[in-house]
Structures are given as structure tokens and as C-alpha cells.
Length: 96
Image (tube, rainbow, N blue to C red; front, side, top):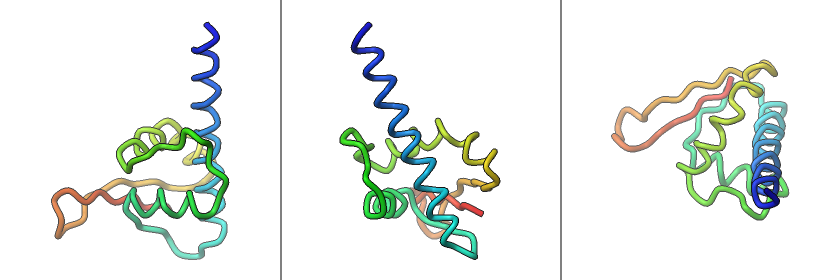
């Protein structure tokens, strides 16, 4: 039970960091932000103190972001996912 509680606490730290990071980025912007998950990961890591167990890849960040999407949307930020037209594998996220 101790490890499960520790794991839940770590997940909450990551979720809170992503939520507050996205909110911080959107407060600074006037226009919508369209970026790749890799660029979003770099932006969040450069602008905040991220937990030690921060997602190490873009796909892991997407999984963590999915866990806080409702909180982000409920705070008034629109989130949409898409693919870049010229790149089959490039995934985009748009915050508005």
C-alpha cells in the first residue's frame, strides 16, 4: 500500500505541474498556441520546476496530459489534437 500511495502522489505532482504549466503559458500568450508534444515538453521543462519523475518522451507527456485535459478545459482553455499535414507521425496540440 505504501508504494501505491507514493505512486498516486507522484502522478498528482506531474498532473498539477502540467496543469499549472499550461495555464502559465496561456496567460503569457494573446494568440493560440499550436505546438508539437516534444516542443511542449521542452517549454514546460524550461519554464518550471518539474518533478523528478517527469515524462521522458512526447508520448508519455501525452498520456499525462490526457489525465488533466478536463481540468485544463474547465479552466477555459480549449485543447485540440491533430496531425501535421506534411508529416504522418507529427502530432500537434493546439491550446486556445
